[in-house]
Amino acid sequence: MKVASGTSRSFGWVEPDDWCRRCGCQRAPRDTVTRELAHEPFGWRPTTLLLTVRRYRCTECAHVWRQDTTAAAEPRAKISRAGLRWELVGIVVQHLSMARVAKGLGVSWNTANDAVLAEGQRLLIADPARLDGVGVVGVDEHAWRHTRKGDKYVTVVIDLTPVRDGTGPSRLLAMLDGRSKKAFKDWLAEQDQTWRDGIEVVAMDGFAGFKTASTEELPQAVSVMDPFHVVRLAGGALNECRRRVQQELHGHRGRKGDPLYTARRTLHTGADLLTDRQHERLESLFAGDRHIQVECTWGIYQRLISAYRHPDRTAGRVEMSSVINALADGVPKALVELRKLGRASGKRAEDVLAYFDRPRTSNGPTEAVNGRLEHLRGLALGFRNLTNYIARALLEAGGFRPQLHPGL
Image (tube, rainbow, N blue to C red):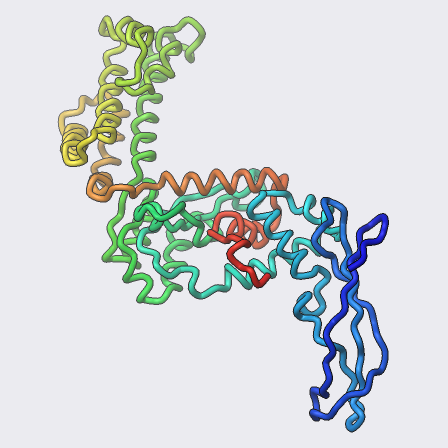
C-alpha cells in the first residue's frame, strides 16, 4: 500500500478471475483499468482507493469482463465499503452532519447522502426482523419542521419493550406522515396479525385518535395514558385558572410584583420539593379568599403529582382514583378549569389508572427519542424532504449500530 502526498491515495490489486462467466472456458488477459473509490479518511484527509482491475477476454466466445470488485465496494458505487462504514459511524454514532462526513470523504453531499441512505435501507429499514419481539409501543406526535407551508407534524411509533424489560433504550419503529387516527391505524393494519397479537401495551398521550386506532386494531392491548401528559393537563388547568383570576382581580395580565405572577413557577413545584421561601410565598398567596380558586386547582395538581410519586403503586392508584372521582362530582361551576379537567380525566380514567398496574410503561422514552430527532434536525439545519428525514431519523434512533455489522 502506498500513500501519495496531498490527497491521500491507497493502491490495491484485485485477485485474478480466471474463468469465463458465460461459457466457462479459460480467459486471456486483455488490459487493466483503474477504479477510484472514496475511502476511509487518513485522519481527516480525504483518501482515494485506486483499484487496478484486470479485464479479460474469453478465447472461445469472445466475452469480455472485469475482475470482481464487490469485496471493495458495491457495483457502480463511488465509496468503498470501509469508507461507507466510516460514514455510517460518523452519522449514527458520532452524530456528525452529512456535510462534515462528505468533506471527510472528499465527495459531494448528494453522493454521501445517497450512499448512507441506501445502506441504511438495506441493513435496517428493509430488515424484516426489525419489528420482532415488540410487546410495548409508544405513539406520539413530532414536529419535523417549523414552517407555515405544509403539514409540519408526523406520528412516531416507538418500541418501549427494552425499557419495560430493562434490557436497553427505546428505539424508533416508524415515522408516519401526518398526525391522525388514520395514519396510526393504517400502519397497524399493514403489520401481520401475529405481530399485532403480540402487542400488550400502547402508551400514548391524550389524543383520542391514537386511542381509537389502538382499540380498533389492537383490541387485546392495554392503553396507558402517559403520566407526563396527565400532569401537563393539570398544569395547564392551573395556568388557565391563575390567568383568569388575575384578569378578574386586576384587569390585566400578570406583571412584575403581582402575587399570582410572582408565584407562577412556585405553583408548579411539587409540594415535597418546596423550599422555605417558596412555602412562605404560597402561604402569603393563599392567606385570604382572593385566590381560593387558584388554591383549589393547585391542590388537585399536587394530589396528581403525589399519586404518581407514591412509593407504593397500589396506594398511588387509590389516590389517583380518588382524584378522578373528586373531579367527576361536586366541582363548583366557578372552577371551569377543574370541570374541564374532570371531563377529560373521566373519559380516560381507565387509561390513566392502567399506568399503576404496569411499571416502566410510559411515554417518557418516547419523548427522549423526540429529543434525539430534534438534535438531528438541528445538525442538518432543517429538512425539506420528509422521505429523507424519515430515513435519517430511523438511522439516528432506530437502534442501528454500524459496529454490529462487521461485513460493511
